[in-house]
Amino acid sequence: MSRNQLYFTILIACATGFIYLWTGIGFSCFFKSLTGIPCPACGTTRFIQGDFTQGNPFGIFVGAAFLLPIGVVIDFLRGGDRVFRAYLWAEDKCRQPLNAALLIALVVLNWIWTIYKGL
Image 1 (cartoon, rainbow, N blue to C red):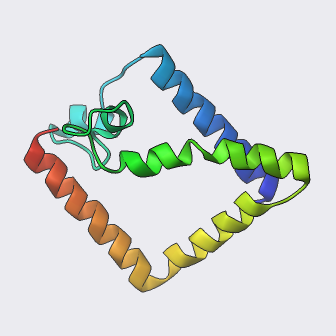
Image 2: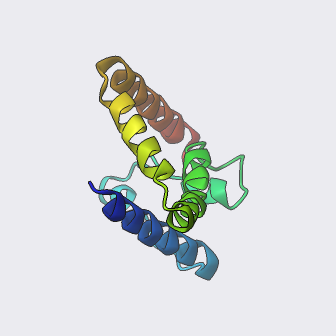
């Protein structure tokens, strides 16, 4: 993925997320509707909106991702590529087998917790 493709994707994804949060347009989880069990991300929106007791802790990462457009704008203004380099670094780390296994284990454990909590 090129720098411009990544930045475009970040801006569109974050704009869509902001619109979803600001308008309150809700939709049910497709995975939960289909299977009857919550998906690994169920409760993320509630967490971002401040419901820390019923929300999904993955909301921390999604909330942090909403800050990426600030970095993209700074990169455009300065002609830099910090966000792109950070993306390449994170992608490299996630491709390492031990790191990938750890991330998968965390997602599975979180999913078990989400099901147990009945989100």
